[in-house]
Image 1 (cartoon, rainbow, N blue to C red):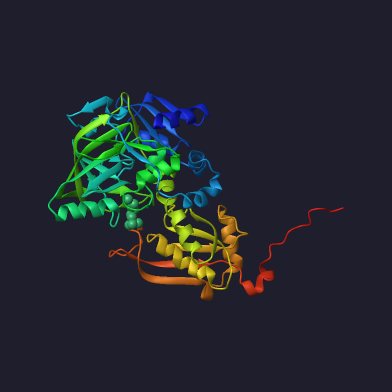
Image 2: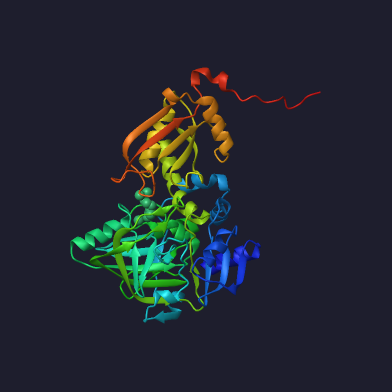
Length: 424
Ligand SMILES: C/C(=C\C(=O)O)CCOP(=O)(O)O
Ligand SMILES: [Mn+2]
């Protein structure tokens, strides 16, 4: 299955918005995407087609995975990254080869007023060094006709591979994949073991993932557009500012430079852009951590569900639902959640009768089941997210866990009143 098959399915079900008019890559297309709920296909940005909001809701993600939106996390946590990968000789991606690279001619968008420049936001960076491979999405700022600055966050696998290559004085070959099947894009946001992203995608799809070899040796999935190139050791440039998941401007940092040596694409390719801080971005940042938290909490008590809430940027706030077995379970669940997602800042643990998709219900749990001096855990000096504007400059922050579960010994005090089903 390809991105085109996926879009055909969305188009047939009436969920695709198509913009036929010519649209500008600078601000205009992102603004239209921001104001459109659901996938939007632009037919002409710099003469190219572009798609945004592909996996912009839990319903869309659930449809891709063939599960109900509220069962996504339980279902993902049961999937092993052991699907089949096949290396093949040819690829539809190689229909067109561009040797004279000019990134400014592509529909790469500038999203917000103070952004440092146009950014590739859905580019999967595939890399390999000394037999170890990786695929993950990194924001990539255009800094020249054939140059990109990549925000390689420590300790993500691309960061580690680049560091190792650089320490040995070697360039790191990479390919940048735009518009594969959405399951491959989703798999590239997950935190599966090193080199396992495509196996995970194959397991998600229930089909093998085919890879073809780029001229720099990187084995790459079929997609709409593939750029290939190298990260040369010691080459750094300013990256940012950039609006990331919090909707605030992330800092300018010195980051590695990717030199693009060649671009392959399908005829009439479809460029994929993710709107920063938009629903697709939040979902792809957050959902991969939910099964990790779910599994970690499952080691300490009976876990029912986990969500990283939209209000918490799908990254900084978790709601963990448990079936409390013994007093103190919720505090263990808090510690497990923080260990599973080190960027997490606040966790609220609730009982099984609280609807974790309803913020009023969560607030009700806090209102009726929390006594701050005994139910709030404050943990200072912990590694937090570099995206948290309130974090300290050394990368640490103060975390808070709230136990909003019932006191087991006093359960009847917390009973939610119901009315009789049958009255005469
Ligand atoms: C850009 C970020 C993550 C990524 O590439 O996965 C967000 C910053 O990461 P933190 O680890 O939360 O600082
Ligand atoms: Mn990885």
